[in-house]
Length: 186
Image (tube, rainbow, N blue to C red):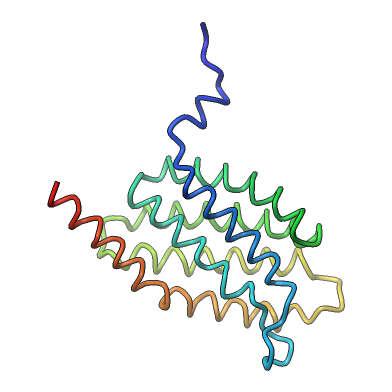
């Protein structure tokens, strides 16, 4: 009896990361449609939600390696795009899918490249580079040619993504050190 190649690709997949990505992408795609009050229409709620997806990718990479992370990103991509088409405008869903897969793959590769450095270096560099890729692709695909002030929204979104790298970093650090302490007590 021959194993199904599709089943084999999902065997051992870390589904909690996949589901976390899907929830974050759907929430960010919903949030990007709404401007934060008091920001003169240049900042959306999606800017605060989406950067967490990069840290999920980084935790998966640190704990399970780059190959598992790539599989998680691919499975997350499929689910997130389907959910996005339900939760958001189709153009936003397409832009989100392209930006997600591109940014997450950059994140996984760059994180892996800097894996041997201090705990905070891989997520810092990978998140900044991946946020750049993600932001450019998302805002151009989603809003170029529309009357949406996408350049100002995009810059504000990007600034928040970079700020969120440093806001979320203590939580990431806690999880990394908790893992290290757990490994020492086993």
